[in-house]
Length: 176
Figure (cartoon, rainbow, N blue to C red):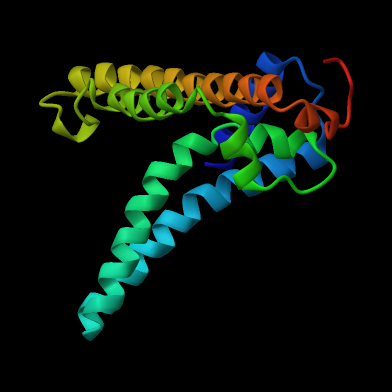
């Protein structure tokens, strides 16, 4: 998982034509982990509350989960922006800076998940040869999905700095 996210960081920085750094990579991975852990935490918290009888709280957590699943694709530029910025960049600022591109980001983020469903899982194979072909195919699709994730993040970042000139000034290098 770490190697996959590190690859996404490197590819996103290459697309953004930005320099790589260890600190930028840590920031990128931190924001990506935050974007994944919020919905997971809400999901597990809601399920736990349902089991223990906290119905209304579970419903509130469920609605928060739905809001998070809608908002996170709109924050696609946040990991790249944070990787390149020396100061914390608010997710609200990123959301404002992607105005006009939100439907495209939302659609691209969720449409890219369809790629992972093209081939069946390897464990459905009936023979060794079929398992090998499915494993190779699923590996190739995973690579394409990672490249697509990096492309969406870098493109969203370019949209964000185009919309918000002050956001571009917070970047540690000034090629833009």
